[in-house]
Image (cartoon, rainbow, N blue to C red; front, side, top):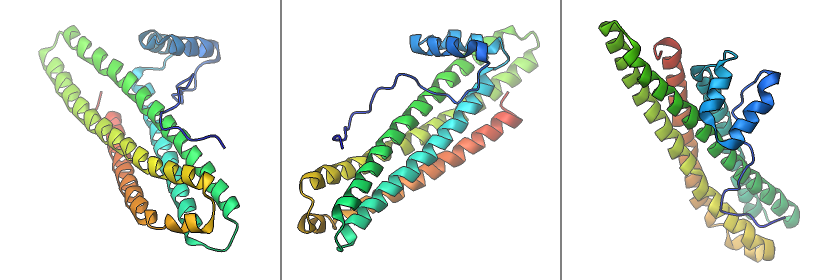
Amino acid sequence: MNDLQRTPSFRLFSGNGLAVVPGLFFLVLLLQLAGCATVEYKALEKVGVHKRDLLARRLDKAREAQTDAREQVVSAYERFRSLVAVDDGGLEKRYKAMARAVERSADKANELGDRIDAVESVAKALFAEWRSELSQYSNPSLRAASARNLKTTQARYDELIRRMRSAQARINPVLYVLQDQTLFLKHNLNARAVSSLQSEVGRIEGKVAALISEMQQASDEAERFMRHMETGGS
């Protein structure tokens, strides 16, 4: 197993969970590679995929990524707890299972970061477009109503992203501890070394509990925001 890195790995593509018309698939990928988000959104709008739709889809993917990351981190913690709690031989097998779980957790954490970045990108474009279109109203009452709705939606979105980033930030402290234990055990895989790590279980458990709580709050906030967009955030 390769040593785990604390620096997030770079990814070639940042997925957004969008089902694109076949003829535009490679165009969208090329635009993403070039960083031309504005051009990408315009191309998608030509085939009926608007920023609001794209935001909803990316939020769904971000929530899925949150769930995956949470479950994988919990799995890695449980592997660690099992490793240090049971003194019946088979250390090598349990260590390898733990190391794989920790590595998958790091991958899921990176994926979650990508998903949140994708949400922020399209949300920024959506709100910029919304603000620019206010000047196009000829009816002052409608313009004022749209401006109020924009303000409310922006505030809800800001709270959503704050919670999502806060939950994301809970992952690394857990991963760092688990990565440390993995690296230590890689070269000290014996009963005495494993026994010496039992005190870490409680410390990690507290971090995992905080992570689960933060992620649930972020998921609840995402659901509220999506309901707002469906019913009033237009």
